[in-house]
Length: 290
Ligand SMILES: Nc1ncnc2c1ncn2[C@@H]1O[C@H](COP(=O)(O)OP(=O)(O)O)[C@@H](O)[C@H]1O
Ligand SMILES: [Mg+2]
Image 1 (cartoon, helix red, strand yellow):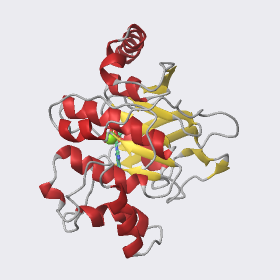
Image 2 (tube, rainbow, N blue to C red):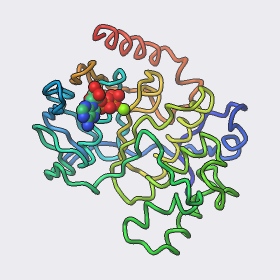
Image 3 (spheres, protein in one colour):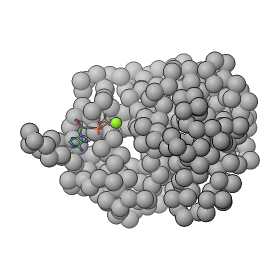
C-alpha cells in the first residue's frame, strides 16, 4: 500500500484503536490540485422547482459551482436548503428545471453513472456481508463478483474493516458502516465523488477521527470530492473551498477559499488562528442568511 501524505487525528476514544493503528506519517507533499484544464465537475446556473399539490416549490435558484482535479470542495447550508436535491442533479438522477452539469468540460446533465455518489443514508444492503456490500460498486461497473471481492478485500485494513468481511451491516459500529459505504464509493472507479453528509450521524470524536482519515484516503486515491455538510468546522478542515448556501430556495451566497496548509492535523488545524478566522467568517455568512 502507498504511504499517505497526510496525518490523521489520533484521539484515543471511539474507534481510536483503528485510527491509531492506521496513522501514516510521511513528509511527501500533497499533490497539486485543480490546476489547468476544465473543472472535473461544474454546475452552471442550476435551478430546480418541484411540482407539489400546493404549486411549484422552488428548491434551487441559479446554483453555479466547480470542483477542479483532485480538489476537495464542500457545500454547507441549513437543513432543507436543497443540498441533496443539488447532489441528485449533479449525479444525473434528477433533471434540473434549468442549467447544466458538466464533467471535464462536457455537458452531462441528467446522465447518471458518471460520478460516484454516497447517499445521505449509507444504504448498505442488510442482507449482504460487509465485503459484498463494499464490492458492489465494482460489480456495478461490470467487474466479476470474484475480482470485485478480491479488490475490495485488499482495502479492508485501510478502511478499518479487517476481520469484519463476513459480518452483516447490523454488526458494525456507525463509523465502520460509513467506512464500508465510503469504500464502496471509492472503488466505483469514478474521478468525482459526491458525499452527502457522510458523518452526520456520528458522535463528535468519531467524526473528527473520520475526517482526518478521509483526508488520508482522499490523498491516496487522488479523487475530486464534493461533500455536503451542515458542520462549519468539518467544511473548513476538509476543504480547499467552501460554498455557502442560503435557506430554501438554495442559492450560492458565498464561495470561501480555504488556504490552510496541508497536510492538516485535526487538533492543530481547528485551533489555529487562521482556522478560527475562517470559522467566524462562515458563521457570520450563515447567520446573515437565516
Ligand atoms: N421530490 C420532491 N418533491 C417535492 N419536494 C421536494 C422533493 N425533494 C425535496 N423536496 C423539497 O426540496 C427542499 C430541499 O430538500 P433537500 O434537497 O432534501 O434539502 P437538504 O438536503 O439541504 O436538507 C425541501 O423543502 C424538500 O422538502
Ligand atoms: Mg440532505
